[in-house]
Image (cartoon, rainbow over all chains, first blue to last red):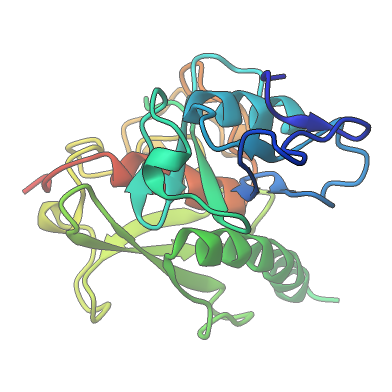
Length: 107
Length: 151
């Protein structure tokens, strides 16, 4: 889990804290949001300075994408997001839906 | 229930999940021709240069056997030529993955070492692609980061 994704019992971004966004992530195994899937140990609420790679790692953990040989990419509004950039740098706001593509191998 | 009806029922469930993914990704998705006789749907993808690519996914005998994934033109009149393929795929031309029936030797592809019933196994170490939503995601990821066409 990344440093900034929230657990069910801990929520960041309170009064006076760093700005946060609550997002949804569509993956090939379902949607990760503040309510889906039921029982997810972490929820996609992030400080806007969070790097894209942290969101990818969290989405992978929620849905059990354990294969390191595969390529995981987050997309937003038609763009492929660079792992080292922050959510804020892509103007990702509260309620935004990101898409995680997962590439299998090529023969 | 006939085999064709059972296939269609399965495909419709998986297509709904694939359509949800496509909607979130902003991909054009058309399952209006889906029927027992023709269990087929279409998805359009764009590459890094915003070139459009149109994919036909035909699901005969799904999920026992993998679908046939083929690139077509926007009018769906031409199919399977190199100019219709993104540069990221095999030069045959073919999407050379276990989830594509065209990749198997018996269907004109290069792989005589694969069996159709094993299509949900991983291809060359990547994550296993086991259903239509995962197929659409695999194509989306590969095409989105590619540039140019095969021909």
